[in-house]
Length: 456
Image (cartoon, rainbow, N blue to C red):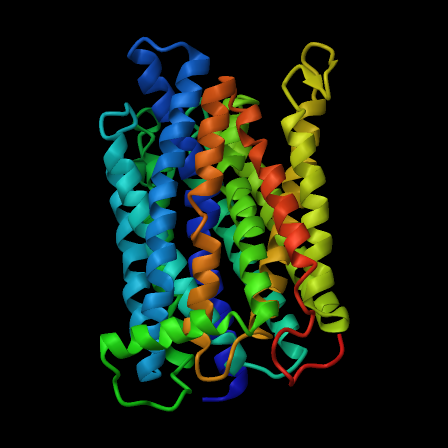
């Protein structure tokens, strides 16, 4: 299999799986769940603000639990995979979980009768998507050498976000009904989906599953195992290797600081992705169609920024790119916390002003664009710290650092939301998480702990 085909196969895995994050986590299913949960809690007698806070807390708690499961399992499974030199069976299994979870969300009750099932189905697919990505990320060092890794990483994320944009446009134009029962272009939802039962919106889960099935085919055909097959190591042996790697962080100072830094700033970024659509629903009172349009703009920005960020990464190295992206995202968070439908940084706006919507569209573009850049260059920086032959375990540790505190952003948002009674002020802890990550990043060596990199 040619190197070019392997690279394109790897890009297509991002294309195949990214819609789960774009459609399910951020722009369609997440806001849909929030709307269903709020209506359900209001039907039980809660006021609107209390129902908003309760719905956001429920979503936060579910993602807290999922984050812990992913964080704990990622390095362990990575160590087991590295012990045999095989990653593809794991990627196949976790892709199947993504598909199963996507199909299961079709059975969501739009009246809120099975909120826990809705969460469980979503979380099953989310676990599959996240763990499949960790194993696929570990294949990046096999695809290029030196500074080319940055461009490959950026192009991979750009490909994924383009897939997310196209999938989002398809569901908004053909399936998801607005309040008038028509899609965003005035069509009846395809397949006779009933707008009253939100069938077009509920179909997003099966759509994402079918998308993953179809577009992962090039990946599984072209991205064959390239590592040397090793004798299978026992579970205890794999755990011993993992323990050795963790202990070795005492001498690999740059990697240790990078993992700790990314623990905070990636948690904050995940918080933005997770609660961005919910914020628009609960604070700005946007409907699913408006949020979807917002998502298209954000995803296009992510694709363009990721590609450009990869080029800059190749020229200056990943660390300056990561530093710049975090700095701007801090400013974006400050703007969001000080934005309401009627005011901006405490200054009252005219009744019916479009300024809040315009500002949030701009913020969404920056979150999508710089979020893509941050993920791409962070992945490149991790490659600079990964030891040859142990990439999956190293990326498992990277996954652990991104998930070890994955409960923290949802937990802090839950606490802040409960304490203030405001879904808007509830996202303010993300600012502190970004700042901590930025400070710790200063201790990371731009070339990592490896010796094969250039001076960038």
